[in-house]
Length: 117
Image 1 (cartoon, rainbow, N blue to C red):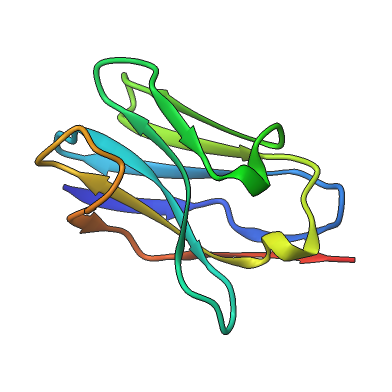
Image 2 (image 1 turned 60 degrees about the vertical axis):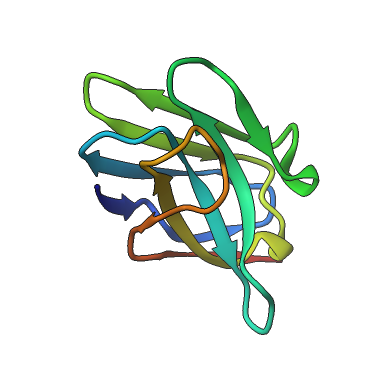
């Protein structure tokens, strides 16, 4: 599975951005992770194939929405009410082995999101 993320950029606090991840190949779960400067990478959101089972980390619940377009094999992360603490490099990742939002075995290149106050 190859993953191509796009959509990062700079935005002011309170603004919105939508990240896209175009996938080639089949996966059982796909999601977004982020890594802020000086911090460990964390899972942001994930969606499992075959259903609408989604996961969001607490800090983004109510602000971020993950969705997918099966026809385009693309997953989106709509981010709204962005905060400076959302600043990070965002990575798209997929699990092609099990329907589990962890142990991702495919990673795309990151896209930088910068939120200014």
